[in-house]
View 1 (cartoon, rainbow, N blue to C red):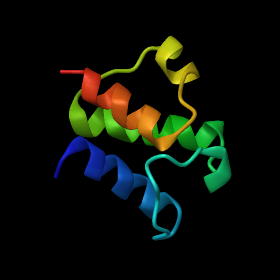
View 2: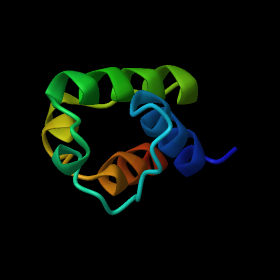
View 3: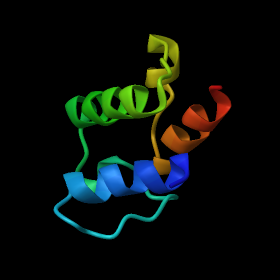
View 4: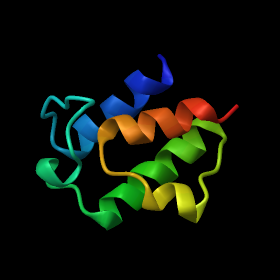
Length: 73
């Protein structure tokens, strides 16, 4: 499973199986800042990466999380 697929699955699970569009704004999905921290923490653990606080502040869409994760090696 790719990082994108994994992140989309994490979000869909968080939303009770609701299909998630990667271009969707997180707020429009009902995802708040605490949810973002949980999702990012799960991604960090799954991919063995770490996001900086500055990077976390730039997250607005599902694609933002995917892009940040893909930039990490």
